[in-house]
Length: 70
Image 1 (cartoon, rainbow, N blue to C red):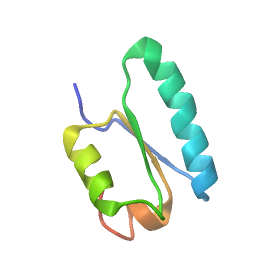
Image 2 (image 1 turned 90 degrees about the horizontal axis):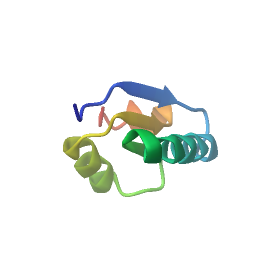
Image 3 (image 1 turned 45 degrees about the vertical axis):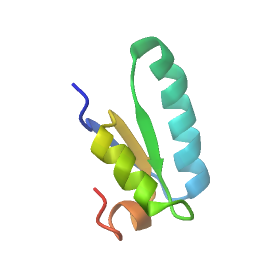
Image 4 (image 1 turned 180 degrees about the horizontal axis):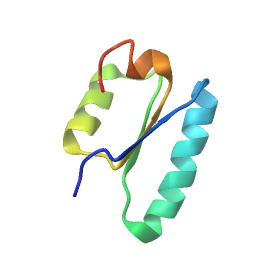
C-alpha cells in the first residue's frame, strides 16, 4: 500500500536528510519509499512526491506544518 505510514520530524534539515538516507538504504531490501520535506527545496516537488505516495516522510516542522503539505 503506497500511503504515508510514518512521519519523522527532525529539528534540523541535516538530520532529516540523514534519516531519509538510512530509510532509503533499508528500503532497498524492503521496497520502502521515503521523502525528505525540508526547507530550501522546491515545495512543488514535495507536493508531487507526496501525491505519488511515500511510505515514510522525514522532515522539519517548518516545512511539514508551516506550509500545510502534510
